[in-house]
Image (cartoon, rainbow over all chains, first blue to last red; front, side, top):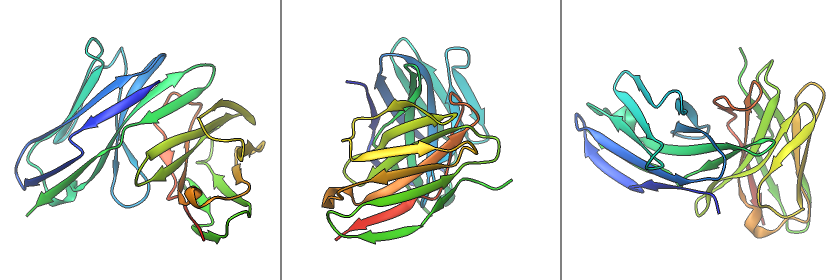
Amino acid sequence: EDKVVQSPLSLVVHEGDTVTLNCSYEVTNFRSLLWYKQEKKAPTFLFMLTSSGIEKKSGRLSSILDKKELSSILNITATQTGDSAIYLCAVEEYTGGFKTIFGAGTRLFVKA
Amino acid sequence: KAGVTQTPRYLIKTRGQQVTLSCSPISGHRSVSWYQQTPGQGLQFLFEYFSETQRNKGNFPGRFSGRQFSNSRSEMNVSTLELGDSALYLCASSLAGGQPQHFGDGTRLSIL
């Protein structure tokens, strides 16, 4: 069965720390891996990684896809309290139509 | 540009009833996906629609159904409601699938 596993499930850090969130997957027809941030209700898009784009960076956030190890990491440097959120990893597969499988998420809390 | 709009925001029903949730995607987006989010199971894929056709479906019973109209707006219907259907139902849209999704704020469904 297709699955996406994230670790750790929760994390508490202090402002200024660097964090690494992990995601591993087993899907049959991999198309892309996506990271989303969910603060209150709607998840918001962070990165999309595919075979042709395995590393992305935006400000203090960066992500790498390892297609050999079927995994990805999301790095956040110099964390701020505003980074406190649930970070969701999702894998999109295509089998005649698109299906997105989400991991359980990593709940990050950044202390001031 | 207006985001994804879901209505209603909150809904309270009793067991055995049925419910219809609505989703208006971002203008120009033709792919609409629905998800169920619960504390125990996380975000689970329900189905994906494109050009009024259901292209993919998750592992949910037949009580869960949906449709998409010619203007890309989508509805999701759940019949014979059960207590376990209590959840946040999220709708997400993208141009054609295979791109990052934009999520609505969801409909919080509570079953008494």
